[in-house]
Image 1 (cartoon, rainbow over the protein chains, first blue to last red):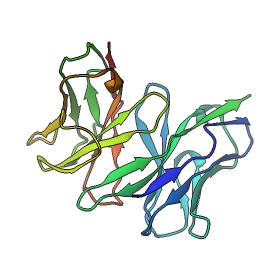
Image 2 (cartoon, each protein chain N blue to C red; image 1 turned 45 degrees about the horizontal axis):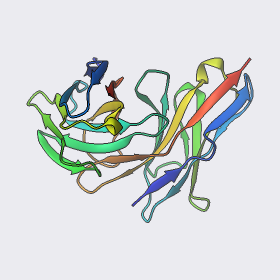
Image 3 (cartoon, chains in turn blue, purple; image 1 turned 180 degrees about the vertical axis):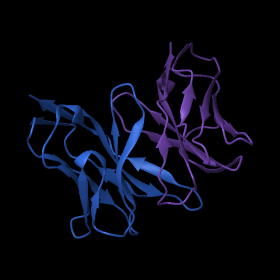
Amino acid sequence: AQSVTQLGSHVSVSEGALVLLRCNYSSSVPPYLFWYVQYPNQGLQLLLKYTSAATLVKGINGFEAEFKKSETSFHLTKPSAHMSDAAEYFCAVSEGTGFQKLVFGTGTRLLVSP
Amino acid sequence: ETGVTQSPTHLIKTRGQQVTLRCSSQSGHNTVSWYQQALGQGPQFIFQYYREEENGRGNFPPRFSGLQFPNYSSELNVNALELDDSALYLCASSLKQTSTDTQYFGPGTRLTVL
């Protein structure tokens, strides 16, 4: 079974600082990886996904992630944090034969201070 | 284009009761997946429906069942509710059920079991 691990349940940054949210995956086959964001009392919104094309993936709201096979990582970054980025972020890996099951990490809450 | 909608928003039930949650998929999407998100956790895959048939299931007991209708809307039914069933239930729709497809999530139904 495939899995993802998100290091750090909470990450705090100042507005304007670099955002780095960590995700490591475990997979016996080339993985398909996703980052989702969840704002309070809302569902999940896709930020970006890796489907074995370019290793550097650009998403919405200025976020990007780099797939590194040698490190089994897919960390999410944003050069400059904004107050509106405060939310819960989930990394997920896709698995299933004949169907698609997303396996999510436990999430990282991003706190942005002024 | 209408996104994924879910009803009701909130629900309170007592242990042993039965509950039905509803989901309308995004226009043109024929695949619906259901996830359970316990407080402070990432979503857990319950099952997926494709063209009215269940085509994949996670580690949930049979008292969790579902339906998909010809218009691709879906229901999640939970019988004999337990306290641990208290969670946010998320519905997601997608164009296909392949590993690289994007799942679009609804806002969720928060179920409280007393």
